[in-house]
Length: 231
Image (cartoon, rainbow, N blue to C red):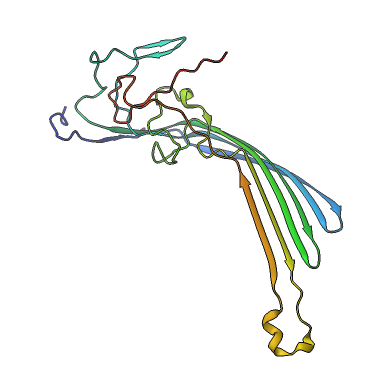
């Protein structure tokens, strides 16, 4: 191997030679109902489905599992196996095999009158994918930098940016202005508005992981998910 003996080891990047074309299908529709002469209610749906989405892992050069059992993958004992290519160091990889899906329900109540304007909006959304990072394994603060590339289903779950609930409210009212009889000195007191914006949303998901190298994978970004038992 021409890279053997380099210190520090050479870093490599893997990208498929002829990846499949990735694309995203988007769907949307909404209905509106005029509740009163100055109140409008809008309810809509927005969804999308991504095909062959980029899936990036920061290090694919690690010890591979030797058994795929009904209980999960089994890695060799410590010191009995080596990386796929011991002659190089870290090798990041990008695969165009990911899949994503998004559904959301959006409702908006809008009120407009001569002096008062307001809007109340609520969104329920759910985004699911294999990896939320396209350029790096950890594009978000709650991302896993090295998701298992050999089985994308192991990383299937809520997106790193998945925000399930979001509420926002907006109100504006025109403040009383002094009459014209006050003369030009009162001009700076005219045309003022009082506005208020409130935004509330739920948090983003996180993944519990074990530190160190519990799988003996010899990866530069080693981790493992803890076992979970539900009674």
